[in-house]
Image (tube, rainbow, N blue to C red):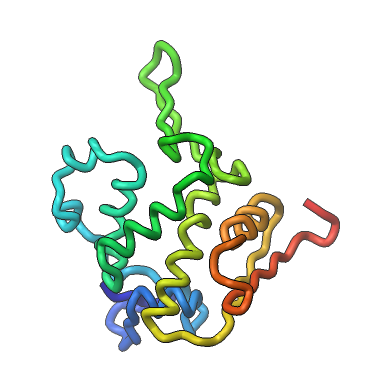
Length: 181
């Protein structure tokens, strides 16, 4: 899977890059965000939709991520996912689907991470992917993660990177509103 900037127009010659390069760079040279060149079909997971329905959160995450993270083996992705969604979520299902009593309504609960913010779901995995991408691309420079927040993004980013990559490799800076959140 290759990645391209959101600012690249169809037909423009664009530098496609690997997922590892996209993760390391963060933002494209033209200021755009990196997106996959295409959305993989469910069939690319090697499993049917009925098979995927039976998987737990961690197993499903590995199957869904694998077609996007083609720089990494299934085993590496599985280790990253297991580390990200281990004991740092207070629900065994990570993101349980809860039915409203006596209705056909459901809610996906995304607040079971360290900071109780839905952003914990993504920011728990990013440090592992960043570390694997640095190894894959032989990236030796320090990485500075910049985030701006009005509340939960900053805390989720700090928690996600706490204990992840070593202090020698990665720093994180969080910008908060001047008058507080």
